[in-house]
Length: 221
Image (cartoon, rainbow, N blue to C red; front, side, top):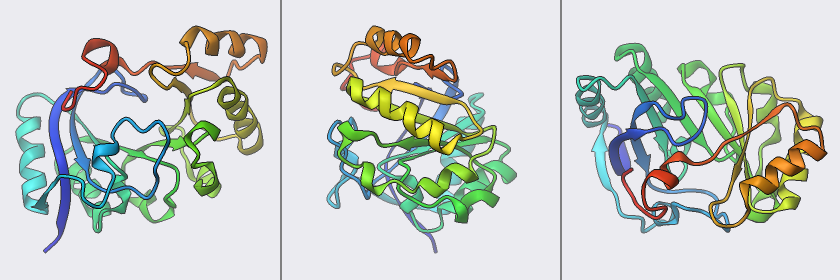
């Protein structure tokens, strides 16, 4: 029987990505293969991250209860959700069996080729220099992204914004591109200034809504 390390689950609005502002069920899984310098969910990333081991049937029950409350989206996040064994089947069942839109927030360091047939929508990070994790990026993922997916460049410095432009020009992903400032590290207005100066019309600035609505350190929101 499949077992999954579930760090928390809750209903809130999507704070970022293509469905920002929409209600979603969040399934946060424990464990990550990266250690980003500015990670805002570091508590869920380590081997000793708090979690409960749940079955596939329990995950489906949680999703069914959310759907009964009018929720139509489910966001798989972490940590890194794609590290969970059998997560492809979770994506498939949530989408095809329950009819939910499944968004997978992935860190860009896991190959996506094995998950393309599962029916989910990917919000893929590209880790920029300030994360100190850029060397782990699977750049072959860019060729696999579809128009309904998106790439999120989390920017903690001016250099990050310029690097995001370089990456976009090199790989030309065929999906929306977001610039997301690290909360408290860079002024969003500074990113806008660079977007204008560098003619970055193909990008969208996106703030993390949940950090403006609730305490930036709050969990379960």
